[in-house]
Length: 88
Image (tube, rainbow, N blue to C red):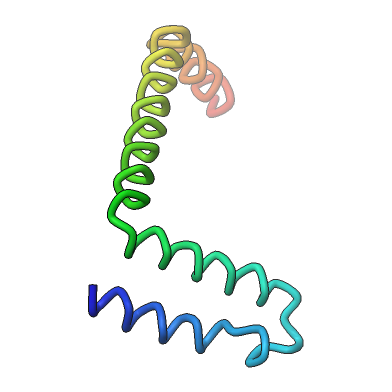
């Protein structure tokens, strides 16, 4: 928790909008840093975020499997044959 707080303070000081008056994204970046810190220090919020991240990774894995099943080796073989024709 001390390391998280220390990292937050360093980032918050670096990306504070007052320190970057010419950066139009400074306020949004600062808010992202602040929200991230709030999630990391709140055990229930962090657990909820971790659960959401696990669901997202599982969804991406399933999507990759579906794509592989739909396009499979036949799709890649077709790409390979096109590349071979282009090389000739």
